[in-house]
Length: 336
Image: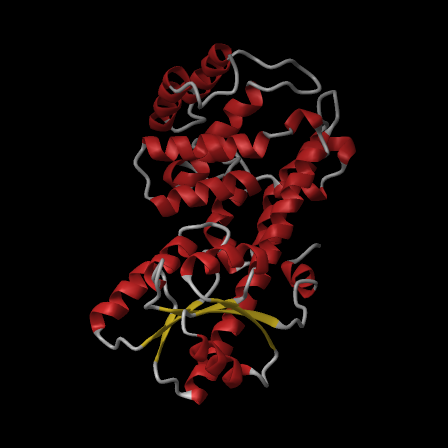
């Protein structure tokens, strides 16, 4: 069984950390270089905020030491831009300041600054804070790497079958639309977005001959297919960052009448996000081509789902929201 413990071993490498020092005073930069010179760091320098922003994308630093008071663009503005950009938001920032008021620190934290060092610098304190934030950065990088591998595995599942290409992206988008429709919080929408991408990752362990079979599955083959939920949950469970989406992966094939799998849950025993995912999964499966049948129109698909809802398979309230989105939101459905 593939585990995160194995794949994260490849992520851990010993490299020299890159630190970008941003200060309009050359003497301050020299002082910081001298403090850090015997440590395993590669130092880069920028003398104003705009230069720093340009250099960040070129250098990709592991940590930024950022002065507050600079011409052109001050440190608060630089921090806000970096923390609002998906590419740079995880880079730790230590703000260097002679300002010691609570207001300045609160403004810095609001901008996304991770720590503060007051001038004049305490050498031991500065070295320790730099070291600690770099350790945190290393951990985050390893976590990101492990997540990237898992998401790559999910894309590999889709690549195994041309009929399911784009399925996970569509479910991610459609489930978020459903979540917005019922006013879920942003953190729940993030869970749906990620859960849509990873809900079928367990199929990586299912033989291609079964996944791509053109005829009906045998009872034995169907039992094998059903294991993808528990396999997917085991693949993702070692990563704490993916813990919130495990119920989606495990329970998206449950039905509210208890006829689903793997646990035969009923009604509200099925987590809401899993109920949403299961419903849009069914809709997407019906409205896309399969090796054994062409895609259905959205009208025919909705008639089938409506009948199944009447027979107790799907959450009636969620079905009403799905029907409304299918008929009114042109960006929701991929079919005509």
